[in-house]
Image 1: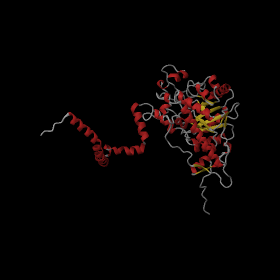
Image 2: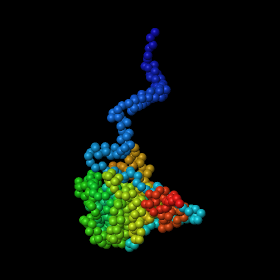
Image 3: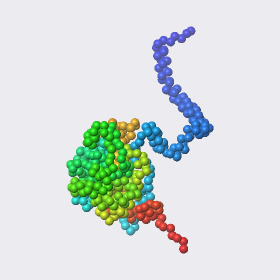
Image 4: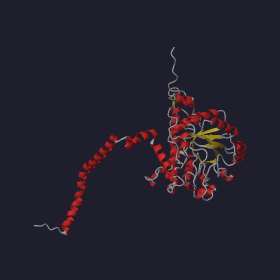
Length: 469
């Protein structure tokens, strides 16, 4: 007798199948998955261990080990266009640094300070200037350029954070953003190597210190910013014509040759109206030669960027293969400037409170931070662009996502990270029995290896080997 399948019965069968299907799939899923993965892995391993090297994916292993994955990626980027490639945030190389320096407090002959002891972290930069710059903490927000690097939102957030922290923020090399000094507590204006870099008297009047920029850790010399990368308001503030690229000069406007320095400084001193004038340079083997001229010209402060220093959109060769590590630059500069009233600001590769405190112990008056505040800007906001864009898409000028950055939230995050770093440095100073930065000294440090000891002049932990009688 044939079975008649009515519409109702068909519907019930479909429903039953739908109910049973997940259970069937659940039962079969694991063995099916294992079967296919086993086939794939067997095939891959057979090819890996039997095919000739020149036809084998294993060819990549020695290549990556020899060149590094980053080298292969950058080679591919060069091969794609035949043009310069520009890294966004500095060298990945690990330079000689502070890891082999340790703090060495006394415990029996000198006690640490109590938890409630006040620590004086204030710094005065350019003390011999008519209007020296005094900040509450020894951490400065480094120069990051509006327009050629950061967005207006990012620059204003950094300025607001600096006011909360009672420290200074730096204009960087970009066009002058009028709202920035208004939002900042203390404002450092760069006199830089771009057509707009001479600045107007009105712009200089808004600053608490000037910084003549000749180089930095990840960038020196000429480059080119495409017209498309500096559009809109930044282009208008820069005074660039439509379609005109931004190209830096060998030196700030007004200096055509080294012999022009004295008259340039004389005029800049008149325009500065008593505020300190700093020189910003990349650390190189010619450091003492540069410092000698800077002292002779009457600079009030020297800002030195070690090879670890980043730069937005500079070529890998300048980031990886130019300059001296920050530790070497700091020690050499401090020795040269020891008997002068010139303040010393160090930067390049400072990410932790311990690194900053060691630099201060070795003689830096302040540490300028770029990467730390840059990434703090996007704290708790990266979900706005993740996972398809990097966090910095929220802060760069030519990024469509820049308007999504909450200025208030970003400012709070930057202030929080530098406040926490300062608090950690204060606790470390209590442990050392030091109540002010003026009391901190190289004797608070010990070197774990002979190279670090030789470079810094700090005592080596193991001491010199005694010769046999």
